[in-house]
Image (cartoon, rainbow, N blue to C red; front, top):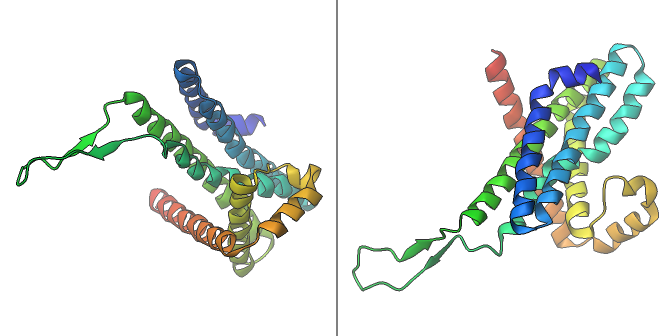
Length: 230
C-alpha cells in the first residue's frame, strides 16, 4: 500500500479536498446529498487500490492472488461510472426560465438564476463525477494491461467489452434497484430476484447505452494517454 500512496498521493489529496468542500456544503444547507457524493467518490477510488494489488501479485508471479484481487475490482468498478447519475439531483433546481418580453424586443426573455448554491451544487457533482471517472478509467487501463500480460490482445479486448457490459448492469442495479456492490456477496438471492423482475425494454436500453458510454470513455482515455506519453 505504501507504493500506492506514493504514486497516487495527488489523487488522494484531491479526494480529501473534495470531501472538505462537500462537508462545507452539508453545513450550509444540511443536505445528505453531499455526504453521499463523498461516499461515492471513496467507492470510486477502491477499484484502483484493488487493481494495483492485482498487478503487484501478477508481477510477483502469483496469478491466483491476482485473479482474486480482480474480483473486488470488478464489483466496485461500476461505482466510478455511477456518479454520472447523480446529476439527477439538480433536476428540481431552476437554473433558467423564460419571462414575457415586448414584441420585437432585443431581450430574449431568458433569465438565469443568481442563486449561487445551485451552481455550486452543479460544480460539486461535476467535479466528483470527473474525478471518479478518471480514477476508474485508470484502473480499467491497468486491468487491460494485466490481462494482456497473461492472455492475448483479442481476449483483452473482449474483457474490456465484457467489463463495460457488466458495469452498465451494475449502474442500473445501483440506481434503480438500490443495491450496493457488496450485495452480490451478502444478499445474492434477493439481488438476482430483483434483477430478473426488473428486466424490460428500458433496463436493456439503459444497460446498452451505458455500456457504449463506458467503452467510449475508455477509448477516449486511452487516446489521451497515448498523446501524453508520445
